[in-house]
Length: 163
Image 1 (cartoon, rainbow, N blue to C red):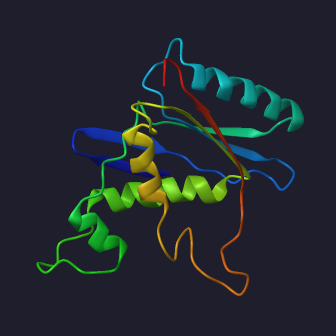
Image 2 (spheres, one colour):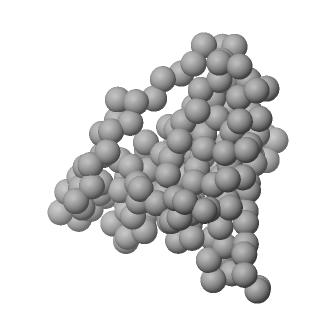
């Protein structure tokens, strides 16, 4: 059980590793719209098909509109890179959340990310999530093959309007 609390937010997460034959899908939704979201509808369709192909599979959902990952701060970046605070203070709360997000990512057999396009780009909440899970030595790095273990992932994007 992981617990993250701070900045007016409090969230608990329970991660369990399924049995060897049970697959896990990590679903990341980043649309602020709950109703009428085309990207969420695509993710719903994908999830339904995934469950048909993986009976008994486990879905771990992360809704970035509900559980906000804070944008990186100087103290968080310093903690990510191993720089100790001059005053000896503990790592920022964002590092704890980052560790939880990475644990979800590493426990997944497959990942689906649904995202709308806002102002020609992904929502800032998705960018913040990416900033928390992309950490050298934890989720990427170099080995004799050039990179760490690959995961099966699907990115679903949707744009609307005249651009």
